[in-house]
Image (cartoon, rainbow, N blue to C red; front, side, top):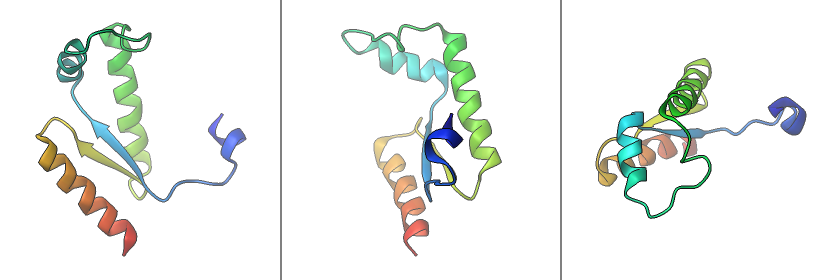
Length: 88
C-alpha cells in the first residue's frame, strides 16, 4: 500500500515513539473514553509495536526510535538529537 500511494517518495526522517505496551496501557487508562483502536486487546498492541520496531531495524538510516518511557524532558532531548542530525 505504501508503495502504491507514495511510489519512490520516502521521508528523510521518521520518529518512532516506543513505549512498552503495559506502560502505554496505563497511560491510556487515565483517559476518559477509549476509541476503537485503544479498545483493542494487548496482543494487538504487541504486534503493532513489534512491526514498528522491525521497520526501524530495517531502515536505521531513516527510522529513529525514541524511548517514550522516560520523562518528557528526556524525550524532547532525544527528538532534538535526531532533528539536529537531520538538519546538518
